[in-house]
Image 1 (cartoon, rainbow, N blue to C red):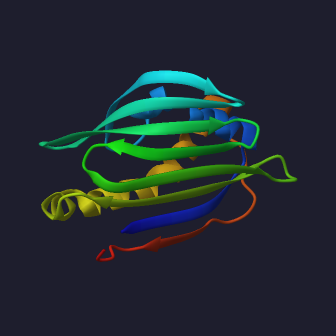
Image 2: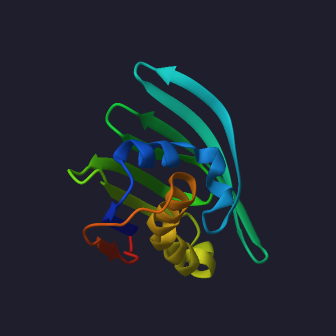
Length: 166
């Protein structure tokens, strides 16, 4: 199982960062490896919005798609992504956006995944690992583009756990 966690300070507000990450249709514009994303279903579940989204990823000759359930909880500023179908055996992704006193926020990002096929893992595992590690930076850069660049206070902390046999 691959696990990557980071709590990363950004100069943008928690509300702005939540809104940016919640706009999943825009991911192909700025995230590594993502070539397309289609929201196939969108509904309200109480005070949360639930999406079913299919993402197309690619690198050179390799193309794959996978479908996830995305739960958007605007009040809590949390996003949960649960795996439904595709090349993974397991995929779980969580985002939390925590306000800071300086007007910025901390992005708390967690992803755990394992590919179904060992061959696929061997071919794209390292590439996917590197792309995932660049995601928080890609979102921060996108926020600078959308909301304007702001000075940052604080330093990131990250942990990455490599592949485990499971």
